[in-house]
Image (cartoon, rainbow, N blue to C red):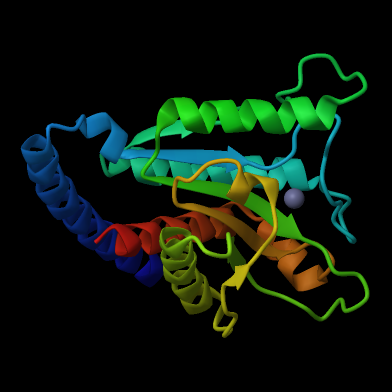
Length: 227
Ligand SMILES: [Zn+2]
């Protein structure tokens, strides 16, 4: 109960911040003659999908692709409730590659790039889960950005701060060499929400209520970046 009250207050605060951002960005957009939609759009990318399940939970055998989708759908609710235009790269379990034939991974990634380019987002958030079997004690969420992208780094740092508040850990955001960070110049992050190689993280990451808390932390971190 205390938790839900707190969450309600946070939601109200986040909504107020979002309203201020939308108002101020909207006014400067009018001044600059730009379209509102381009400024208020986020692309949410649930990593993997279809025959590419990503990593697999050590304890439950859960597919990373399914956890990614669950967090992404919770994140969509948060952004839509705050008035953002949300574009998903995938909204179901399927991949984006068409037929599962040779070159499917390349086709899947190119399709994601196309969707981001079409959406012209203010921010792109790619949701993944980590796996590090040689050290199963590793836990917690981590945000990655493209080296040299100041906006990507700022977004990653902001989301990292929110993830640390949630987990009580002190991870730092890191530069990463990933296609999803390099395929466009929009501020982009990959969020590795936690480790499916760690039993405690896996239990949390497969829990609906924790998935919602995680999504909300990512949402708040993104709002802080935009303000
Ligand atoms: Zn992944």
